[in-house]
Image (tube, rainbow, N blue to C red; front, side, top):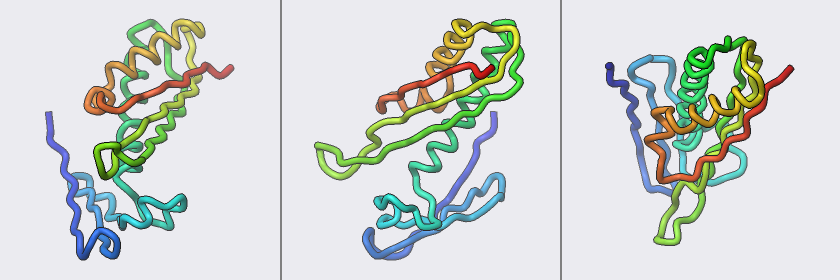
Length: 146
C-alpha cells in the first residue's frame, strides 16, 4: 500500500508565527495555518490539524461504511458524513483532541434501519483513521434518510 505525504513550513513563534501545509502526494493545494486562528472560533481562511483530521476521518469512514453496506447486501446510493474534531486543554498541560463526533446520513437500498446502524457502528470501529485515533472519544449519530 502507498504512503501519502504532507509537509508544513513554519516560521516564527507559536503565538505570532504561521505556516503552510502542503498536500504533497496529491498536489491539490497548500493551505495556511496559524495557532491563533486554530484556537479561535472563526478559522479566518486558515486550516488546522483538527480540520485536516476531520477531513481524513470523514473520507475514511465513508469508504469503510460503503464497503460494509455492500457486504451486508445493501447498495449505497449516497452518504453524507461529517466529522467534528474538538480541541481543548489537556489537564497534563498544553492541548489535546477532546472528541470527535461523526454524523452520517445515508440513502441505502437493501438494508433496514437496524442493518444500517450495525454497518455504521462497525465502520466506526473498523475505519483505519478511527483505529489511529483510539485515544480520542468518538461518537456516532447515524440515520437512514428516506
